[in-house]
Image (cartoon, rainbow, N blue to C red; front, side, top):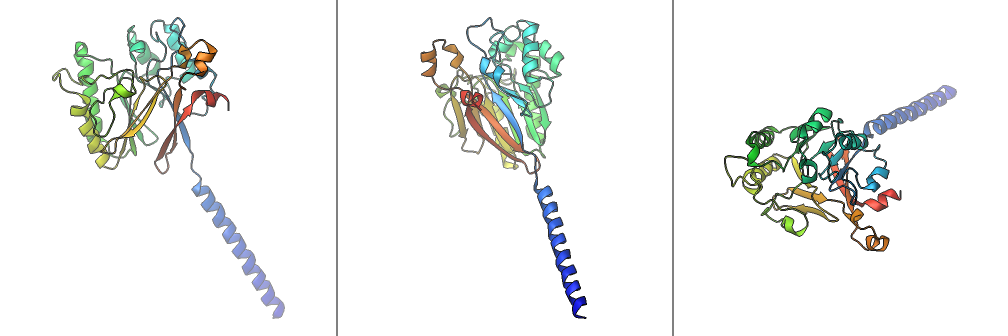
Length: 300
């Protein structure tokens, strides 16, 4: 009997060890979550070229680790003048990827040929999409009342998105120009952006259909439904902004400008350029972001 008791105790102990080992494996596996990375860059063209090149530092970056590239406009200084330039941009950023977004800047839009981008990428110059639980609205802030059909269509999409969004954890607006003048608690784009289209009208029907009048109140309602709202601006040189309005809406922006300086000493003494990196865990809806000095990213 004594021996049998020792064997039973040994079996129980062995079973307990096995149970806790299996429990550890289950918890460890279930606790694992994939963290995705997204990159936002704005005003990315290389100065002193024929208009067909990005900042050479972006060409050198390893972008393979990003599950999304968000372009804040002015990608090349003459981005759509030649189709070969568009092919070059596509080769770097994979414009067909569902989470690659390009908000046209004036340097992208001014030569026309917008249809090239739509035909190559399958995306218009303005659109909404959803990826891994995040909803996006890509704006074309180059639209004017001279193109009422597209301007009004973009507004219709924005209104419909804000009125119907329910399941997304975040709503992200990506744009080029500064359009958010007079937002409560936020400094004017005059302080950090290269543009301030405070009179940009979102419809042809009302010249006063500005961001603060027509769009911002809708974003506040989205926020009140428990969905985080983030707006990202790309028409910036070597500056950055990370601010929150009085209503809890996030406003971000950054850009590149250092390639303007050809003299090495002058360039070294110029303001640093910033890129914006997002980290996202779709399983629990966690999203965070951080600014990085572009030159320091190349040193890694």
